[in-house]
Image 1 (spheres, rainbow, N blue to C red):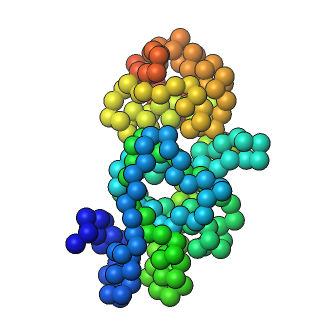
Image 2: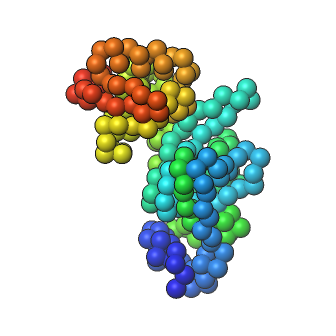
Length: 221
């Protein structure tokens, strides 16, 4: 048994595949490792397929014609995405880019296998659209934050979420990285963060932000 077969077997449609379909997926799927900061998929790349995050953190974002980036969501361990497979799902009319935010390992079912499966197997097709619905929910959450939350709320949300994810009050990040994550300008983030520090909510040191009063940060949400 291939080392990644146990992950493929967790896919909801696996039990509904024929033996031949299973063999094709097992034969052509690959596990790819990406160092932190490595581009996984860009607008100029061919379709990637279905990706299953085995380890790490993948940032999914869009880039405007002017070069401005908008973070849509992150993919963490055991999460799946198909937005990079626009040639499989015709309804996807925009391009996303993926970058490894930390050393990551992905299991990829290539588009050459995924596309014919989607056309012939209703269980695969249904699952792909289910994943798309989940991801578009993530995108809508991002849009809601941009449109309806004040800047201090957006930054407080980021800090609280990052703290919960790392299970630590100390967050290794920079103003530039926060701006990238909440889709704002570094100067705006720096101004709000200084305000938070003066109010005793956080402490800032080079490359690290420590939450001093999480309760008051939560009150901003």
